[in-house]
Length: 102
Image (cartoon, rainbow, N blue to C red; front, side):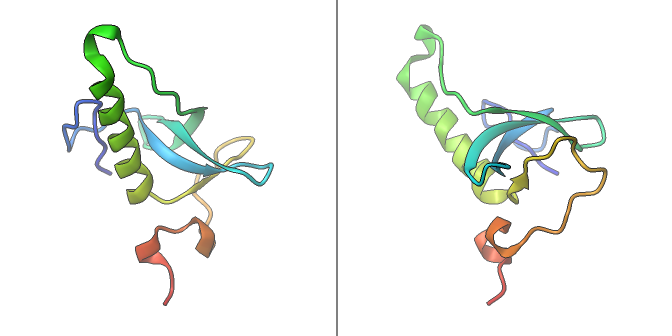
């Protein structure tokens, strides 16, 4: 799987990306999802956008753009007590728009 670095470089396998997560309480949220060496999700944190002063406001815009690309290009994950070895087949609400049945 291709992931983006914060700087926008493609093709380098990273340990996290942004994903939309379907939470147990029925809400959807944008999260940083962390992966193990086999590319399985191991945990997540709510997405939080903050940058150093020297990076300026443009760095927030760039982070938001990266999060949007990630969220649009990856399937929605279900929040789980423990992440499954094999991901469950997503229902239609969890699929990217281009994967949904017509």
